Length: 215
Image (cartoon, rainbow, N blue to C red; front, side, top):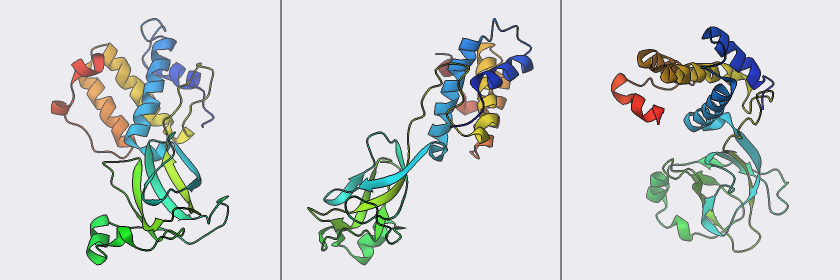
């Protein structure tokens, strides 16, 4: 969580738009700010993460906690319950490579200590571990995962992301304002600036559909 209030960002955007706060009201921009936070986490999941010791389940197929949205890292072992013992590092490995090296790895002898994990971004809440976890005495791992960002309830509240995201948050509000004002060329420029601030590839005009964002 940051230290900058929503009002600080909203007031700056209103001043930059030379608005009398009627057309680009605080409520409109606060809603846009909440949408901006969600957009940032969607584009850059590491913007809002949890790091904690997580218990694994029997077998190779594992999941992040139900409150999470995407796995970021399975860093190292934390022993068995209560999961507070510092253990060895865990390596990320390509599943196809492990299949080639050890085709029967899924049925290997179980162990609470994880050597490596596999992750498919098409299934962001799931991952596999090797060796398989036992049926009891399961291991814990130190896990980093992304979670959905909470909305800002009141403009006087601070933003729910780190202060380093002030610039893309501001750019996203300018994008929303230009959409509302039907200045679509400027909206595209501001959205590209928003993506650029997050280190993402720019979108083209063919990919930009004003009708969708107005819905």
